[in-house]
Length: 368
Image 1 (cartoon, rainbow, N blue to C red):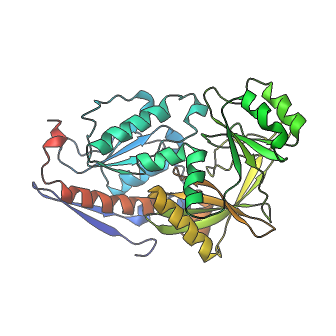
Image 2: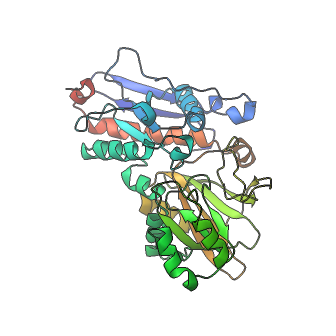
Image 3: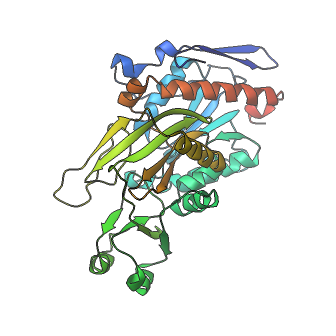
């Protein structure tokens, strides 16, 4: 199917045949330059409790508005499920035939400390009932733990930064004379480069440990090898259902925040410097790197997501991050002629049709 093709997804139900038409011409907001408005209201057929629908679990309106708009335009029935103000019956959480998880590990940075825990519980409840969740509990555990990511990638045989996991500042002091500097100090639960610091030497590290604000409360601490790319850029590839959408290079300037969202605020590596990040399309990304990234996402059970790595001057290809909350930049989509939101809508329409075909008994949709 071409990038800007039209897909018809037939959804069979005992009552009737539902046809959803995905018109790609209406999903190209990045071409028109029209700003996307917030659309967090439900897009469910009025009075029709049997229509197949998608529950979208989220926390950040700003990142999800483009997806909500795309699904609304495509005619895919959905309901936004905002974990900031959500409650559910533990044994009867299922209200939709398909779910998509889009909760970000950076939730706590926006004051939503309970969002991650709530999402973990909701996904577990849904999957226990046999519900299909795109980017479900396994991928979300990886999204919220750098330790879990590195263990998975190491088991796949790809290169990852050498990392020490420490339980406290006192534990760091116990091993400080065994560390190789410079290194990176970071939290296990990432998110937009928050709390990541470059540590130049032992004295610098010990001084930081005296600062009670070095980490947010409850964060596991990591001391990680500093990996430097050959060209100063970090590579990132985005996939939907195993299909490569596009590759890009991210060139950070005085920041560890590699979030691709245009409106994402950049935190500086230190006070007094101006942070920025440049995003460039990478049309000739090496095929073997793409294959490695695809296998990482497959093993992560991550249906929609991205992978980051660095190629170093001494020949290493070091994978550093798995991202489950892909944000598609307008400039990259335009440069690559790939509409990421159309691809996501096409995929969700296919999955919705599959799940609907598996569930001839619709009594669960009535909540009985």
